[in-house]
Length: 218
Ligand code: DX5
Ligand code: ZN
Image (cartoon, rainbow, N blue to C red; front, top):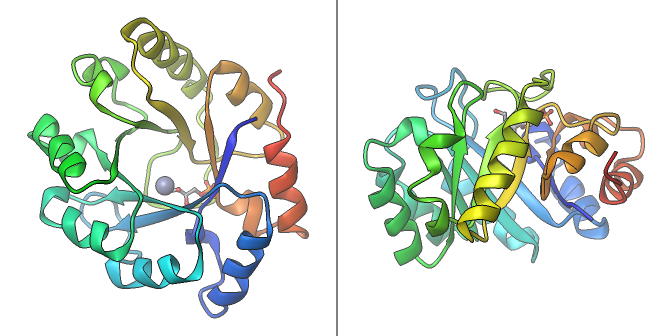
């Protein structure tokens, strides 16, 4: 069964307590928390302050996706805010290896995200050092976009790299995940499904999360 990580970017920010209660009552495994700086991506979302509130609202894993430049400047702030996993973008790091070591020294799980245009081969020398690879299946910045089908090819290649290297990294897919495409994403080798609009725009979010959780590879 895949892990399901609803993205709070699609929540109703005027009733976050209600949305957190819903997630806590659901089979969601992680909170996926999207941080955007208006530079690495053309949108601005939220920072450590809001994440510290999410931390208090749940005992589930807080999966923090940093879509920001120079993530090394803020990693400690996000760890202190309560992140369990911090994912940084390969495209935003000149010294990716150093930044991964920084995350480990902070005691959080280290994730690396790749934009749709970035080949998975950039990870070949560090794949054993990381806990998570987040493959962007849309261009990051906004919820509610269409899944890019070529991501399925990248998932298969990445799975092969992980298996042949002995890495324990999980594969997370972020962007445009729906009930319809989830079976093929899981079949390609994904471990974690991020879902924003699919969960929060659903008539019954709890049932939708349960359905994602029950995804069978197809
Ligand atoms: C996109 C974010 C995603 C987004 C997913 O930049 O990283 O996590 O919230 O939203 P959906 O599932 O609606 O594409
Ligand atoms: Zn994300």
